[in-house]
Image (cartoon, rainbow, N blue to C red; front, side, top):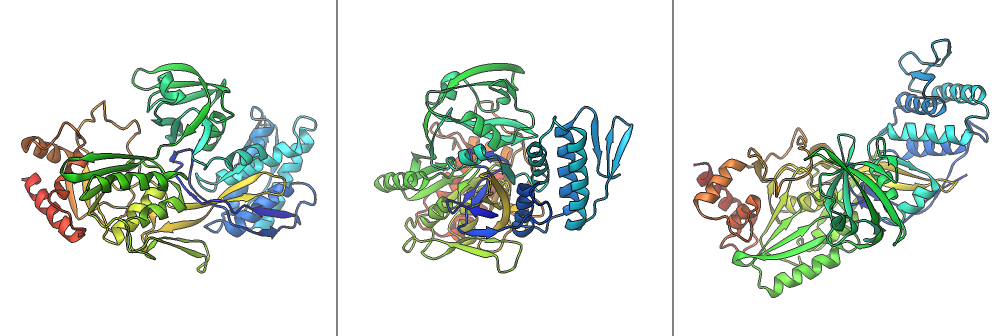
Length: 519
């Protein structure tokens, strides 16, 4: 049997966020052969998926845990009211009357035999009530979900839809969503979208889609339900935490053109560029923004990557290339094996924009945004201000299964040019601004706080409290009407009278400012 792998695009996105991209996804070319040796004609897709996990997963698989999760999910799908699985005891219990014993260890062959025992027990006891296919899919879902938050099994319909998710245009409702505390949350509303016109707000929590409870859904599941053909309708129910009221909306899908780059000129010839995610259109939109900055005689750039959940890997490499000399390492991936390493380098000619850059990040800056800021920091091309980033540095590869379904599987991890493990540590800012003030309701992030990754191999050289920065800006009258964001104002102070792209000089200015701010 064949396992087709699609050579399409690589994504870098969070469970955390989805600009309806969840993670870094690679589509390698080629075929690989699988033989259904254990199960004959039963459970062929299960075995094929298991083969992929054993061969391609970034870590050596824990078969005891995976098979335990597969059995538990099968039992739930067969008869959740009367059956229960006890992984520790190795048994399936039926109404406390009959018990099926099995034994799991860390050996795939042994665990396979135990798994088959439960599978055929369920088929026999629930003959006519459960199908082989239903049990198989439940088992696959169980063990894939036990791997990590980013790996996912997709049925044929979901897999086909996922192939359309990275174009930058789609039939949808105009929302960016995230998973926090097992709740699906609205992160951002796109301008002039059905969601904006309906009055949906960032922070609203999904409860239902087309009458279906969202409890237990993954981000990609919700994205699939929200998307569809233009001019079709979808009903959603959302709970607004600010008043604890659930609201129902009926939205008409339309083509959403994703605006991922926003440009704004600030005082002292500083160009402010915010990148909200990385889609196919991001490089072209950045090129337009930089052209405007150039025509406006910009002397420096603030690159805002806060709340950016990531997106396409190739776009992050291209974006970094606008600020790096040609052939500089932007990021590399490392798989389970030592020789499973891939490097991604800038393709620009001698650095396209040779201006001082301050990059802003926060706990919600993830994956592709971490790749950009990590490379600029490592090559001393940007001074980084804000919070430690999210730490989503894993690569998901999309595999086509022989029956047309698909598997999104974590196959490697991202590292910055200096070797920082993004998943383990995130990116530490040069200047850490610690939040210690109540958030302004107008500007507050709708997302709950995230603890920074630890330990951090490159700790911030300067640490400031937000209250100290706020007091200093007010005392000096440096909070302008055009921009009330304290981090942007700090960046403006660092870049003041600075048109030379020298990070050492920027750090000296930052240290001088920090001393005055603390005083």
